[in-house]
Amino acid sequence: MSDIVQKAELQLCQAINAAAAKAVQAGALPALPVGAFQLEVPANRANGDLSANAAMAWARELRLPPRKIAEAVQTRLDLNSTYAQRCEVAGAGFLNFYFNDAFYADILMDVRARGDDYGRSDYGKGQRILVEFVSANPTGPMHMGNARGGALGDCLAALLEAAGYAVEREFYVNDAGNQIEKFGLSLEIRYRQYFGEDIELPAECYQGADIAEHAAAFADIYGDALLRADEKERRAALVAFAMPKNIEGMRGNLEKYRIEYDTWFRESSLYANGEVERVISLLRESGNTYESEGALWFKGTDFGLEKDFVLVRSNGLPTYIVPDIAYHYNKLVTRNYDRAVNILGHDHHGYTLCLKAVLPSLGIDVSRLDIVLMQLVKFVQNGEVVRMSKRTGKSITLEDLLEQIPIDALRFIFNLREPTSQMEFDLGLALEQSSKNPVYYCQYAHARICSIFRRFAEEGVAMRACTREELARLNAPEERELIRLLASLTGEIVTAAQHYDPARITRFCMELAGLFHKFYNACRIKGEAEPLMQARLNLCAAVRDTLASLLRMFKITVPEQM
RNA sequence: GCGCCCAUAGCUCAGGUGGAUAGAGCAACUGCCUUCUAAGCAGUGGGUCCGGGGUUCGAGUCCCUGUGGGCGUGCCA
Image 1 (cartoon, rainbow, N blue to C red):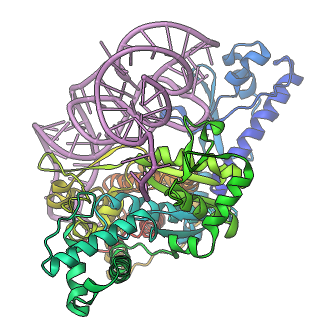
Image 2: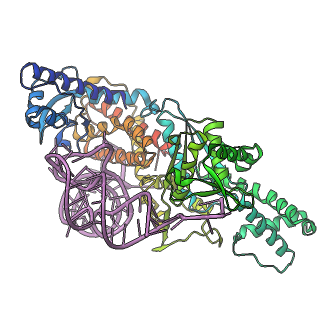
Image 3: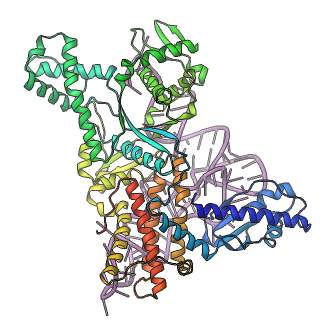
């Protein structure tokens, strides 16, 4: 919470409790109430700036009508050392408080004093969080379905940092297991086809053109020597050739998307360092596994799952979930992050239940793993749903998307809705009507403010610091609303972090820009008396800097001119 | 069949641990630029919060139930 807002709420709670105590002494209340109550911002401004439901909360306990309790408290309130100028009893028994001038002035001074730091807090107390996102398979180019996860994961990481966590970003590279076998097989067949062999590419193989391109590139460099090599060796050589190119390609695309990872974690390293074997033996030791039909099963039903599931197949190979278990063991035990946050498509929810069911058997507290199940995006163009199929290779790649649509717009739009809500992305709209994009609305507000300062600079007028009394002159409704919104930022960042929901911040930006535009149309700056003009310039600077720091936090550009 | 998520204005969506007259953006219509950026602002119209029960001072929000969508439910990942 912002220091000022927090202080204001604390003061009012104390004032209410003190008034209640006085009411008891005076015999207006039968006993000192102990029930908890809340202070909240009313939906309707006519009901004050902060509203307390104490009287309703105490009604049952005191066996009195809420309204009567409210009046007993209200008449005994001492607001002298608070940020409230008055309190009214309204509705069913709400105590509605109205902020005084000092509140508005102090908020603005706080915003100006803290600059880019405003809104940030130490709520997370430096806890170490590992945010894993995208983690696309290195068997081909990323498709546009990865776009939401990228924007969400990166902005969520930034949000958690702003809320005081020590965050690292990680990409999990699935460079082992079955899909790599399939990748090798696909490359091999394309390679043999390249030299004229008449063989079909099986349906279960990767059908994309990129596979054939890799095979051809390999052949152009190394020739047909591999045709005579052992099958296993041939596939390994092709994978060793193609996969690093794919990984570099992903890294490059993600950089264009302004995403940089602290770590690219290899699945293969879990086999190499023995952690895959280690978790299997730990799970055996836990007593929560059994053998059946030659396979090793985990007793999922003992942990609330519908059915048991296989850990090690009868052919001796672990299923996909085992390296993932090892990976989370690595995150939470080996590397000992306080918390792991994964962004996954909602179609993985069955898998996440399995993963969470297993962790306690490794001595890991499940609450340390949070999985954000993001709904998949439905891409629409010309009124038709654009299908994404990696197998047929006909999907739009992430690279195409990044080239067609401005990065600012992508990063903003994908964070406009909460992760769990299904969203529709109209490609045509994003392309043709990009000027109507909400991100421009925010950027425009910033550019507008910069323009104001440029004009003043041309006339030799510079902004100066204002006194509390001068800032208190900002009492137009539009000004007060703007300042109240600024006041709520710190709390909003904490709430957004708690919900893993960066959309709260993009919407905050929209609201801040909107309130600024309203202020701009309602209030003049130039031509006003010097103190008021300066106070308004301070307000403009506060909005400008807050908008800029939030957009920068999400790695969205902040133009000074549009 | 079973499990998870969802249903709010014509469209896309907000509505922290239950609070006062349910909001915003698009779209439609009407106004506002000789004065700080009109990528803006002001205003108008627009609702059975999917249906039905229940919990209580009070339900879009919580519980049950029905309907309609999305997804999952492989010794695939």
